[in-house]
Structures are given as structure tokens and as C-alpha cells.
Length: 171
Image (cartoon, rainbow, N blue to C red; front, side, top):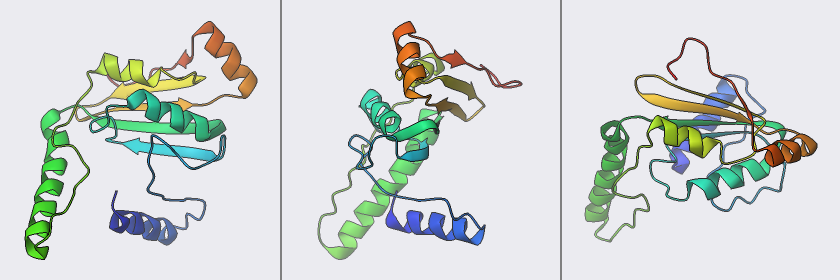
């Protein structure tokens, strides 16, 4: 996300009276927050551009407090996932030409869209105590909840999490 997008999110949150939100740009592979310090994480379109999905999920899990939740949203279509990246690459190229200096754009040129079973498998890579996965025509979603340390240890040893399908949604 750009600083402009973050500023817009902050402004919208304040305009709606949401004072308990914090928006930050960070490296998801190495988050600066201490263990168990975050209430909620929203990760959107992350898997399409990031090869190190398991490491990212591990970091998100690490910083969530017990009872914290992570919402993951990923597009189902490579074309729909590629359009925003192509637009950002085009904007970076135009900026580079206008400023007569190269602009290094960090996003990849291609995207990866996970089939739903692979998306589900990725979300279950951490010892969540509850995971809800579903999809609609355009996106696939997962809401994952971190349990208490005792519960996480027991569930990790058993290798399971409670899987809750979302009613009325395509599995």
C-alpha cells in the first residue's frame, strides 16, 4: 500500500468514529510488532504477489494476541489480480519517464492465484483454533482465530483446528 492509501484509510476510519484502528505499512515477512500485540490483521491480495506465504502467515500468527483474528482475501481470477499490478507498473513507468530517472517498483510483474484447496491448505499452515474459509465469484476468504497458548499447543500437537464452513457460501 502506498502512503496515500494509508492516509485515506486513516481519514475514513476517523470520519466513521473508529478510533481503535491503526494502519501501517510493514514487511509481512518480518513484522516489528512484539509477539501477541495485535488484535486483528487484514491481508488482502497478499498471496498473489508473495511467494513466501507460509512465512508471512507465521509472522501474522506470531504478532496476533490470543483471540486475535486474521482476515485473508485473495482473488480467484489471474486476470482480475493482474490488472491492478499492471496499472501500478504503468504508473511507475510514466513517473520514471516524467522525472527522467528510473523508478524501482518492488511488485512482481506476474501474479499467482491459488486454487481453493491450496488456499485452504495455506490458511491451515498455522495452529489456528478456528478457521472459516469460503469463496464467492471473485474472491476467496479466510478468517483465522488464534487461541490461547495452552489451546494452541494442544491443537498443534493434535494437528487440528476447528473448521467452520460459512453457511450459504460456496465451499
